[in-house]
Length: 308
Image (tube, rainbow, N blue to C red):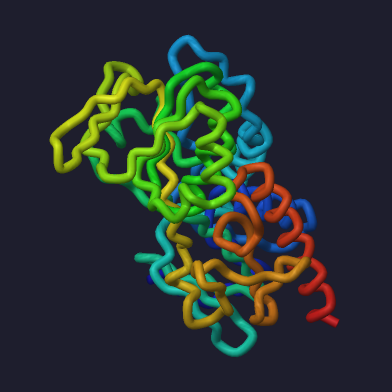
């Protein structure tokens, strides 16, 4: 373990290199506070491009271009980043400590921007077509599927909301796995009355098939297998917040997302959070960008007052 990294105390540690973390780092560096961003990669979910054969992707508003600018800055500023997995995060007095496999970093303030991991189906074809017709974000990618047949897979409210959004643009929405109580809800009835959706409650997804993008989804029920033609598959099973490193430090809601105030401050003085890992609504890149900037500016103000 590096002795120099252990003894040096940065002004700000940022854990996570996705849209929120990159933006926070860029703003912090501009404010001339000594910053160290620690992440396994730079870019997070923006590293996964979404494309569909013969479909223009200009309808997607994802902030990727802006994120890439922040990413380029951090790639250039080697002194402000460390590529590695944080295995432990703790607080010792007024100092925060982030430990990787080979180094330890200390900071007077810290920002958690570790994001979330989408829950997966874990079926053949899911990984193959990820970003090429398989999506975990209906909000981002629904506009690409105008007048196409699609499938939504999920057993909760997010899947119901996804079906409602897709029913406005798609030709047909095959909704797989929703319980009957949700189908009977006011929103479920509205989707059903649109004539755009078919609810398949007593089956599970076995496979996603196609060549360069999804062409059909294979379902399985008591009566056997069935193939449903689709161009897109939206998996809406929810997300797992990457908060395990911070679980003993910060206050979280029922979904294990970190609770923050309007300044992105957690319940721990000097510890901020930004992006999908927090209780802020909607897992969108453009929202994470704004939250990252707000967290950095709040950390800067905290450092100013704490130095006084």
